[in-house]
Image 1 (cartoon, rainbow, N blue to C red):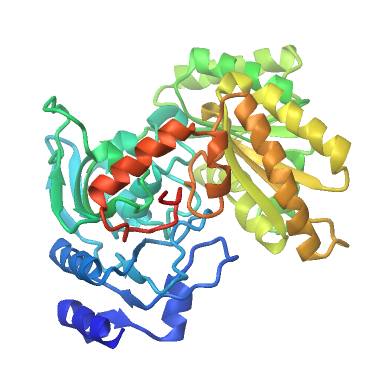
Image 2 (spheres, rainbow, N blue to C red; image 1 turned 45 degrees about the vertical axis):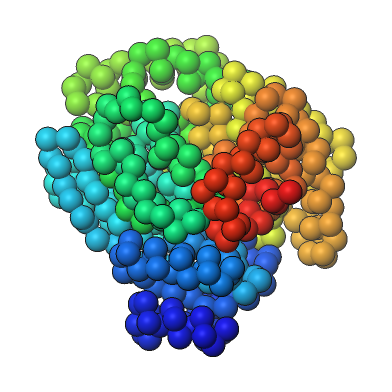
Length: 463
C-alpha cells in the first residue's frame, strides 16, 4: 500500500493524495448513506494524462478504481468500501474550448452542472439538463448515469447533449471519441457505450457538450387535479397546443412536506390530491392566451380544480420550489426511495396498481409520489411510520421492493430511470434486463476493462 501511495504522489503531487479518515468518509460514498466507505486513498488528478497514469498504475497493481464526481447519486455507484483508489475529478473543472458556430463547449468532466449552465448563459447559450442536484453534481457523473431531470419532455436526457468524449479506458488507453461532431457515420458511436456506464468501462475526463438557444419568457402553471386519471388528459391538451419545457407532478403528501418546511406556501387554498407543474415558453402573448384557453377547457371538463399562473420571476421560482424542494423536505424522514419509469401511457394503471398494493398490504405506510410525468419517470417514496423501528422498516422494504419491481416489469418499465443501478439496484437488474443483455454488457466490460478494475461490483457482478 505504501508503495502505491508513493507512486500516486509521484503522479499528482503530495497535496492531491488524501489518506486521512475524513477524506475517505467524504469521498468514498454517495447519498445512499447505507454503506461504510473504506478506500485506500483519494486522488485528485488535474488532467487526462494524470488519470491515464493512475489507471495504468492500478492495472499494474490490480487495484480497483472508483470514479467520483459530485457524489449526488442514490444507487451506491460511487461507493468505495474495499480498499479502492477513489479518483475524484473535482479539480478537473475547466473549459477547454468553445465553438460558437457549432454551439459546442468542451469541458473537463469535473465541472459542476450549474457552472456549465452559467457559462453557457454568459455565452448566449443554454444547457438544458437540469435537476435538484445541479449545484453539486458534475458533468462526468451526469454522463456516467445519463442523468435526466426536469426538462426531459422538451430537451431529452444527458445523452442528447453529448457530442464527444475523452475517456481513459479500464485498460489505460485514451480514446478521443467523435470530437464534438453532429454528424459522423464512420462506424460504432462509442460515446454511447460510456454514457450510462457508471464508471465501469473507464473514466470520462472531457466532454463536448451541445448548447441550445436560451428559452424566452418562461411561464409556470401549477394546477390541482381531482385524481391521477385527470393528469394524463391535462398533459395531452397542453401538449397539443403548446411546446412544453416541463410537465411535473406531485401528490398532496409530497407538497405538504414542502409547505411544512416553511420556505414556500401552498399555491392556492383549494385542496387537491394531485398537482401538476407546467412550464412553457411564452415569447408572444398569443402563446399565453392559448395556455389560458387550455386551462379553462380543462376546468370545464372537470380535470382541474384550481390553478395559478406565475406573475413574476420570483413567483415562478417559488412555484418550482413546490416540486424541487420535495427531496430536501423528505430528508428529515426515513424513506425507501424508488426511481422508476414506464411508458407514459402506462403511468395511470401502474400507479393504481402500486396504490392498491400498499392499501392491501401496507396501509400504515405513507407514500409520496412525484416525478417527471412527461417522460414516464416516477419517484416513489415510502415513509416509515413514526412508531416503527428503523431496522424493522428497512427489513420490510426488502420484501416490498421486489413487489414494486414486479409491477415495473409487468409494464415493461425500468427499475432505475435516472439514478443508475450501482449497488442498491443490482439485485433487481433482472426485472429490466434479460440474462442475454447482461451477458453482452459483461462482454463489453471485458473488452474495455480486461482486469476488472473499473468500479467493480456496480451494475452487475463479473461471472
